[in-house]
Image (tube, rainbow, N blue to C red):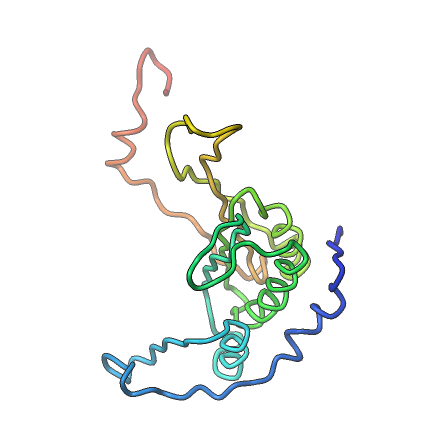
Length: 194
């Protein structure tokens, strides 16, 4: 299986194990709703937060959705989306390892990303979750139309990579067709579908 190598890889691979456990404390003025629901909101570095969740939720999370930085060279208020590529890889890898530990054996992870890093993310996720546990690359259209001001091509789509923790344990993932959607999108003309 191919692996991705970068300057700080060996150190980064150990980072998820080296991150210290943090104690989660409730802050009453930020707490809302019924405490019996078990819902929590964690403010802080996500590596520390994920590590703090492990003792409580290891092997207990059925579905994970992540939206990592796309590394698009844009500035955002809460995170740096303009990382040097090695830094991006070193930030993502240990988090994916902990996320894998949080998943149930029949769980799945969904990762949203654009063209800037999708291929690198795919290789890293192949390594962490196993290439045989790759389910699909869902490509969705994020906008319509061209970029009249664009110098080159305009990206109109993004990706959602999906992996099972254990493909042989994953239940069937399908929905029965919606009869109303079928009427709208599948028309019969001249004896063939269109």
